[in-house]
Amino acid sequence: MQAQSQLFQPGIDPDYREKFDLNGAVMHLWPFAFSRIKATELMNTLQTDIPWRQETLCIAGQQRLVPRLQCWMGDPGTIYGYSGMRLEPEPWSDVVLDIRSRAEQLSGQRFNSVLLNLYRDEQDSVAWHSDDEKELGSDPLIASVSLGSERPFELKSRQTRIREKRRILLPNGSVLLMGSGIQTHWQHQLPKVKTPLKPRINLTFRTVLTVIS
Image 1 (spheres, rainbow, N blue to C red):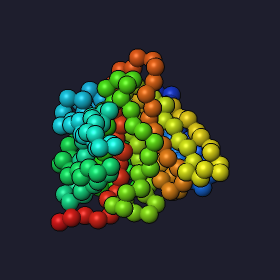
Image 2: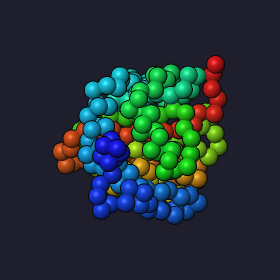
Image 3: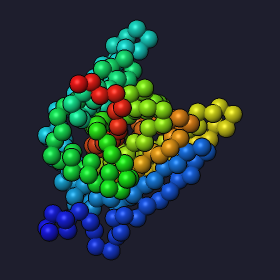
């Protein structure tokens, strides 16, 4: 009972949900999915226990370090690739499985893999992209869990005639479901910011459709 009581905050509905209707897509945000105490505990554990790596990308013929640390984790055979990288899954940790359980409970989805990103400070970032790799299917649903420093999450329409943009703050302990149409019709990024920030960890739970046995 003690562990369960630490998950939620008195007076705050942990299942409270905000819905975002975008042009051709939908998102749902649970800002209080984990209590601040629980989210901080998870953040501290993941920072020390996850086998973080800094990958290298080839951009315009030059090798560049990815501006964040990351780890790909999942069921055996859930191999994933993007930007020329091939990621083989680390075994699930008990802490990540607990986080996955909460994300699945809220979203009503099942996930077999997760990409963990550690943004060490305000200079770490991820550029505009869509998570539309073939391994994820034609219209993937992705649950994004945010721990640590609050960061702005930005979206822009892939339809150039619309040029619509959105900006959402993702608080510590929140879960964002990028629902139907997001990866097809929108791109997203986590930009650098000018204000000094402490670390943030983001877990994006996914379902890889092609599992290699």
